[in-house]
Length: 116
Length: 111
View 1 (cartoon, chains in turn red, blue):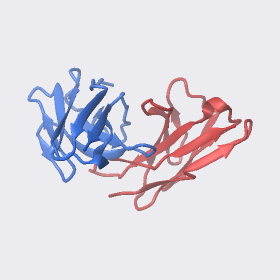
View 2 (cartoon, chains in turn cyan, purple):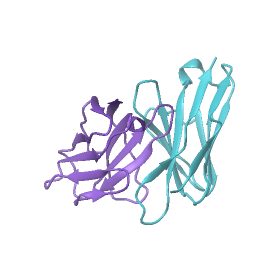
View 3 (tube, helix red, strand yellow):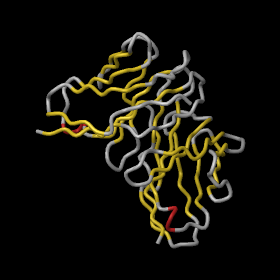
View 4 (cartoon, one colour):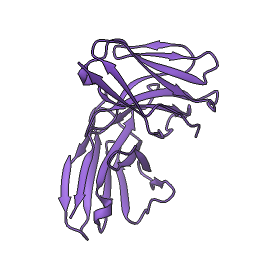
C-alpha cells in the first residue's frame, strides 16, 4: 500500500512559539492532502485541504493565519502552528490519496503536539 | 455531507466474528461507503469500501443493504490487534473528496 509519513511524531514546544509538521507521500504523488486534528477521546476533525501549488482550503472555524499550510511539492505538505498555545495541544494527522482509480485514503502516523 | 450512525462501543471475544453496523439513511447515489479503523495513538487505517455490492478483502467483509441505507463491517475472526475505533464514512464520488469522520465504534476484544 501507499505510505504517508509524518514528522515529527511527537513535539513539545513553549507557548508562543511556532511548530512545523511535515507530511510526505513516500511512494506516490499527491496533489491534494488533508490535515486533521484530534483531541483526546474525540473523533478526527478536518482542518483544511492542502492543494499543491495553490492556497489551502480551510474548514469553517479554522484560523488560516494560525494554521499555515504549504504544499510546495507533489510529495510534501507542511502544517505550521503559529504562536502555539496550550489549547493547540492535540494529535495532528495528515492524509492523502493515490491519484487515479484507487479510492482509499492513506494516513500518516500522526503528530502529538504538546504546548507548555 | 450525508451522516452515518454507529454504536459507541461493542465487545467481542477473540476468534469470534464481529459485525459492526452503520446506518446511513441519507446516502446519495454517488456516495461510497468507506470503513477505516484507528488503533490507539495512530493515524487511521483503511479497511474496506464499497458502493453497492458486498466486498471482501484480506481484512474484512462489507455487507451493504439493498437500499444502501445501512452497511455492516464483518471481521471474521477478531483478534486482540483488532481492538480499535472503527469509522464508517460516506465519501462522495469525486476524486479529491474529503473524509468526514463521525464518532465511530470502539471495539473491545477480550480473551
